[in-house]
Image (cartoon, rainbow, N blue to C red; front, side, top):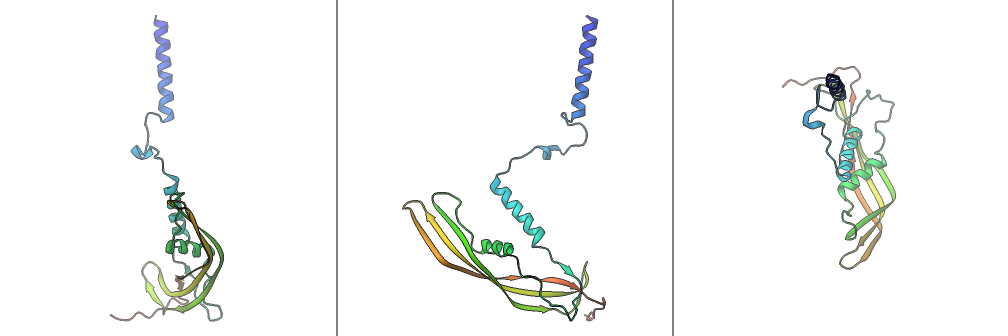
Length: 187
């Protein structure tokens, strides 16, 4: 009897040691309720990923080296990805419920032309230092074929082969001032 009791005691001790070292009982540092996984719909997950991508790629102001007289002032034109994201914000594609109405776009071409390129006088910005704000404005035109399928109550298709959307994109960025000398007006 004593032998069985010692064996059960040893097995209980081993089981307790295993449970305590795996983190199953919540001992040690934990995140509390935040450690419980919550399922997220792929629809919302894609939206969060798009917001993070746009914040990382397009919503930051670049601080570039000083402008010299010999270099061209304008930054690179907006990428096709940026133009298509702006088009989606301006004119979203419908199609959340299949079978009722779905719209498709087939992009034929994208043109980007610069309409303004100018630099503000130097000034001191907090946490940045002496900089110049460089304004670059582009006129973007997207040519596409748009097909709309309506499935209810009467199925039909509308096809616009010569669809076009014109919008403007501002690519403002900062340049450091060469000598670091900025005339600050007295207030």
